Image (tube, rainbow, N blue to C red):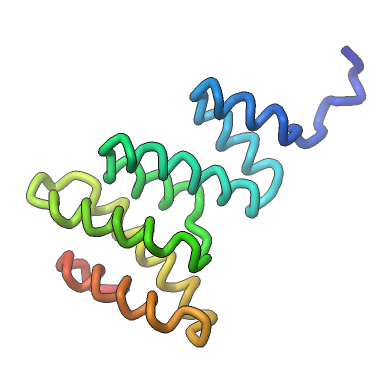
Length: 135
């Protein structure tokens, strides 16, 4: 191999490959090196997989660590994850991650409330429903 590759950003192909292997720690570190947009894209991909596998708490944790883009396309996913974690909240697991993820999301969305008004209200309701005071 040529040494000129050292320090270069990983390729999209390499990230995809790691995702196919299920090597998510590699995926997230490579994606982060490629920028916030790529990091968020893989955060959503991984969280969706975990959520479909029945791991809502894990999904909330992924989104709180690796990014939850305030994109209306993902609001349904966020609400489903929040609802699942809150439904199971007597086990005390996942709420901290969920709160961090929701707070971050609400903050981001509050920056452009005109775009996200409806979803912002719903997510704020989730925060309140969880007995998680915003802030």
